[in-house]
Image (cartoon, rainbow, N blue to C red; front, side, top):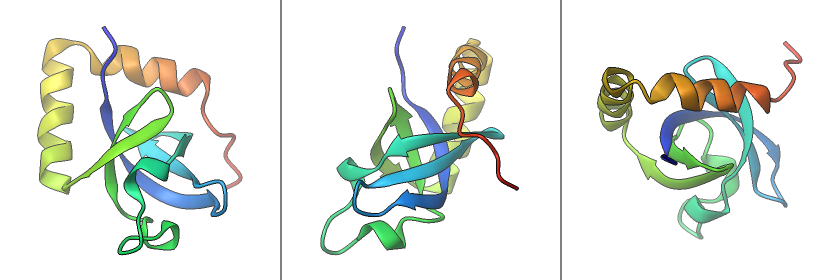
Length: 96
């Protein structure tokens, strides 16, 4: 099953290409944030946003409480671990 998983945008990687680094349960991955930006919410203002990530794209912004509840539900269903493992295979190398 393909599903979206909540993550938090921690860094803008490329503002023109609308690429950001998203932290999903400790796994950091590059995602495209084009679907969540607009004139009222430009790329630069996305750091800190919680988003629903699916196949490398941030599909929508969600609030932190919704993100927490969704992660808890996915863990209960046993799906989160598979998605996190999949994301870690394509994680952005850490420069920290």
